[in-house]
Image (cartoon, rainbow, N blue to C red; front, side, top):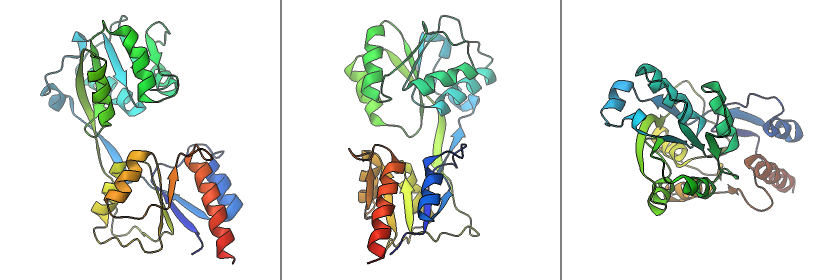
Length: 252
């Protein structure tokens, strides 16, 4: 079956220069952007029940920009002002730079991993083990974080400041796609929640990341495209190659 209509389970790119739009133009396909999951803030009242005191910590760890937004939202709701001495450790440089939205960015108090992967961030953290860390997370998070915190014996508390929940489809929304692209296990869970009788049939499923790939298989679905891989480090590169092959075979 020739792929003509694709659903990407992420928000629409803000830049028209996104490689997704190059794929649309190159192959004449239609791509819809529609997240299967959404983030809900944990109210300050509920956060207090976790009995985590923000100002008892000397460092904060972020794995996503969403974590930064919700951390400073809770600080504002609780009328907490961050001291100048607070240190911030981020999963990647892009997440670290996002801190400029809330603080005066100084390299001596902002640290990040070189590759955007957790082991590299913890290599940086291992040089600051005298700090008391507050780890900002969603209720659904990568268990590797907790494993590495224990491995490096990092003094820490976890603060759950937002939730990842299913972004439910309405009865009016059409769901007629030739291919679905996922980026998290929660996206797969949302698919099965929204469409409990989902029959994959000829629908192609692609995903990014090993944990998402496992979630596809655990749900009893067929995984047709997995990224990253050596010849396709990004989802868009992998999708480009996949559609090229698909359209070539459809002509036979």
